[in-house]
Amino acid sequence: MSFSQEIIRWYQVHKRPLPWRTSTDPYKIWLSEIILQQTKVSQGTPYYMRFVSQFPTVFDLANASEEDVLKMWQGLGYYSRARNLHSAAKQVVNDFEGIFPKDYKGLLSLKGVGDYTASAIASICYHQPEAVLDGNVYRVLARYFGMDTPINTTQGFKLFKWRAQEHCDLDKPSDYNQGLMEFGALQCVPKSPDCSSCPLQQSCIAYQTNQVEKLPVKVPKKKPLKVFHHYVVYLDPNGHTIYTKREGKGIWEGLYEFPLLEASHPMEKKDLEEAISTMDLPKPEPLSFSLFNTEAVLHKLTHRHIYAYFWVARTTHSIEPATAFKHINTYPTSVLISDFIRAFKNSYF
Image (cartoon, rainbow, N blue to C red):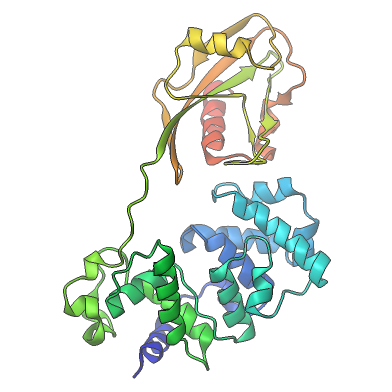
């Protein structure tokens, strides 16, 4: 039995009953694939269900406001995915009359859709033999074929794509692709896989050569940048605060936050007060500053580690313009800010 046949046979027995697997609707497959990028199935599934409920068609998603989409996405991270999702929905509606492109090349034209997502939609929805590559597929291929080329390099992508495509089942490309991903998620897991129960054991080069824990190979990433975020949480007698939309490109674009001072180090109270005096902010007097968290809250992103401090700035005068603190949960924000708001409300309200 060939490699692809073994994968498909295993998949037909062991596949999980995931909600998007009941459909070949390209909208639902696209939605699930975008959500599951950089996200575990257990975390992504509730988001998928909420998106389908709130935006049952691509027209509903295209007509939504970006703020509503970001709010729905809150907690998943990598917010550029949500913005691209919204842009691609508008593309499908405006450029393709609400019908997703029906081939790999056309799918690649959509905002935020790369090789992996285009291949998944083409194979699952349109029965096209386009092989997918994700973290699970890389791992299965690397171990089974004994491939030690680093997977996070251009050469690695080309080699693994060729290998995946070489074995893609022409009759069942959907089951082949989903089977490979599922096999990596459930059977050929990153650490301590149960090779004794693996149907590919006898022909797996990594198992035969005792390299299971060594494959796949990755080029080491650069050490994340260490930065300090000092948030100023204004609070006036009316329960109002300053809470604004983050502008410009970069992390958390379009999300809401308190006034922010970025630094390369922790700040003392006097340094904070001096820095705030130079910022374009309302300055109601008198203000009293207190540090909400004496130890930094560590928030890890792919390329940076953020050490966050929240300074509460109380004033006896009204803040204008302002946002009612009790309403700020209605705005999309990062997990870091959302967690602070929850803790702050429990302490002060």
